[in-house]
Image (cartoon, rainbow over all chains, first blue to last red; front, side, top):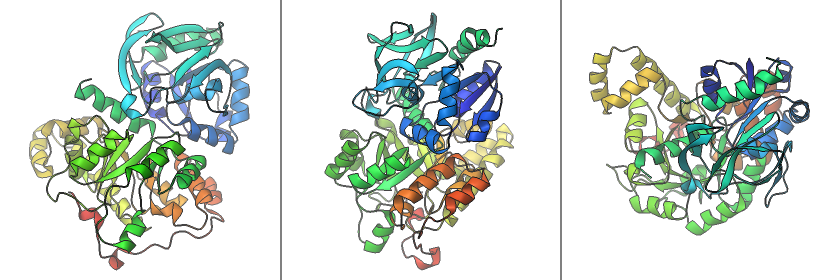
Length: 193
Length: 292
């Protein structure tokens, strides 16, 4: 399986390591022509959503990627990636890809001093490392979304069809179970495996 | 939360800034221009390094009110500088919930021997370094991110290049050493053995390593990325140029696509006047020699 990392800005290298450890091949998307490469799934990494969203437009990658996601391309999104996918942001008129039926609040835990680590359950797997770094919160999501993780009474990971999104970073530790779950549960069925 | 967990989170924020450009700004308006141009973070300071050089005298931490104004203006992380060894300035910046403190040689050092013990803080620190020894000494003190010192406020990239080259050469040398040779190397670098062993095993610094000091053009930024920087700080280079918004946006794209030279050619075209710049021979204050 070949997983593409949106490599415009952020911690795509950490995701790349996790997906390689989970047995996938990887490639990086930095330019429009990179979208012509064949891949079975897409990672939207952590970083700054303002930067990534702007570069998606300026590098003319926005429309083709949104189209591919709408057509069912499996997506694995963390933190800034979730913000890119969200249909609406709280107190912010910006909409990026807008393919996920969820309302998201940026920097919901405050500044870096509000960042925290939690070891929790994701998709039934215990002790998944979850780093919340200037993390967003999911305020609302469509009932069609499947909740995969919760913390402090809030949804922290959800799946809507081909899209998997989380407010935390599982990729900052060597644990690659979240990546493996995505490959097994979303990418493989999409490929008809 | 214990120190180790906090430190990992602080290193984690630096990981989120990778592949991005951190820009010096002096007003909320400039901060907004920087954010709109694609900065992944801004460094709030009263005077950019070129003006600090021009003004001379003692330069200190910025007015917290001015920093708060910038925090209000943007949604991206906001950094600010404290003087080397100035524990109180660092605590003040922590109290206003700055996202990252730069214990910086750009300001006048408050302590000519000791750096701030950064491990006792919750807020993350970035520090400048000219070589592997300096970088690892700062990491031992608790820095969660390293940047080259370069020579700030000159618009001359030569020292940043020298520092990045030197660090990478030393890392390559360490990776080829036998474990028993590392004890002597640790002694020479004045760093703990275990930290040097980690560098040997991973072939890189244990924290994010960015370029800073003298970056003025998209080509300068791309050069630093080609030399192995994980992100770029741009100080005077943007707001001392003719068209800051355009230059800032071009530098952001150059950092993402530093290997696409046709794109770099387009990004470098028609940017207007770059900051004038000064050669190292022409300057009196050598900031890189502060805090080693």
